[in-house]
Length: 173
Image (cartoon, rainbow, N blue to C red; front, side, top):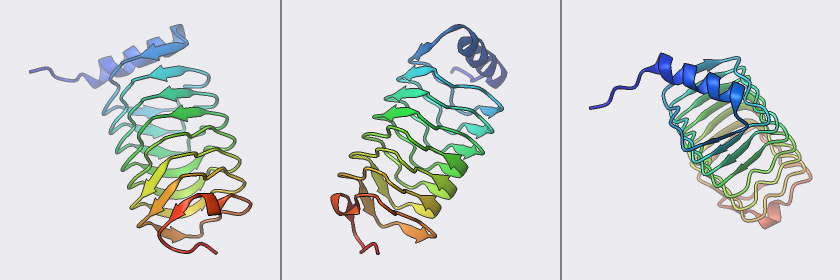
């Protein structure tokens, strides 16, 4: 019945980013975004599902109850971000940094990573199930109540993180 017009949705997003600090209940699904600056913005109840993000800056961004499922994120920065009660399930992360971020109560189920940094972040009560974690760094992270089940691990580091507070289905050395 309704057809999504990508150009219009993309233009609408860019306009909102220029003029508003807080963006509520908007649908930005199925977009192709390159070099977009989302820094210091607040998104509440927004949908970015199946969107491709290339070289986007999310530094200091705040997400609440947002959906970024089945996305592709490459060369993006989420440092010092505050992402809570959001879902990134089924997404692909390549060369993405979440350093020093609050990542509470999030769904990362089924994600695939290649060179992703979560260092110095709080992932309290998040879920990472059935994921392919390749060269993911979880160093000095709060992992209390984080569920790590049925994952494949290649070159993953949990150095100085509280892995005893997390739930693993395999023993982590």
